[in-house]
Length: 333
Image 1: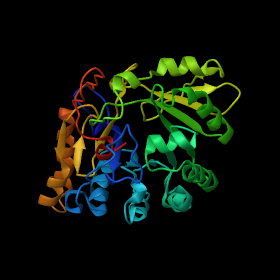
Image 2: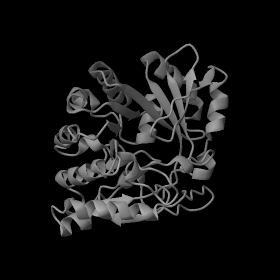
Image 3: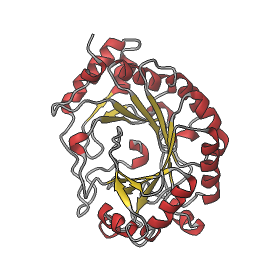
Image 4: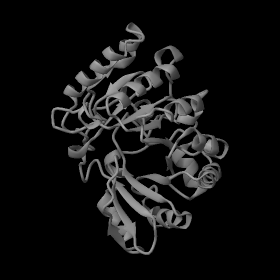
């Protein structure tokens, strides 16, 4: 039998060991950089069942994937999603079961998620100003997310991290306050350059672009950032804040392309195996498993073959209309 690290290799020699799985396109927020204010969500028949998601996840783990991230939309709004977490948490080859969430349901679900086997959680938090929070999310309440962070800390996950998408003249002035909040909470934070997925009308992505180097320069006026040797399965470039345990990450799809180290693929809620966030190279795994129920060997062969079309890099261009028309909520965060 092949060793786990050698089973999924793309044409550029990159080993895929990490799958991000979207369990829903629905969300209780309407973040303006993620989706339109009025969204039409997918009918149930078009999305994978929880059982189908588990089947595909199990196949990936048998092919050497050691990390699964559950995303959405907002994954915790999906009915019975805890049952999926419990099953995934028992996969013998899985080393990391992690979650990305907007935090709106953590106050109620954090302890159950910990018991199900979730090790780490990323929580979206773009501002500490309640008014701005409402503006950016359209429907969210900052107090609810802060309560969720508190509950997650109490539950004792291995690691909590904040994710902040930074937009010029909307929240770029708050990067220092967000880092200080992370320090006070003894958690980590990553700053993310906005990704041009889906057509939006609230702002020009070129005009709102605020690069990681600019964020670092802003932070340097308040903190000393020490380059970290830590390497995770994600795209963040990490620094440690001097005198603290807090790490600050930068996810920079525009200013510091990280494609050469890409080790991940995405499974969309419709069952599309998406080989690259910034391209449309995909294989329909929903069609495969519904046409061949129970044939795990065939499913795994399709997944192996799919790696052959994984592109070398994404093609994001802030000066053009998005070449990727799907919104982030349907792709999986």
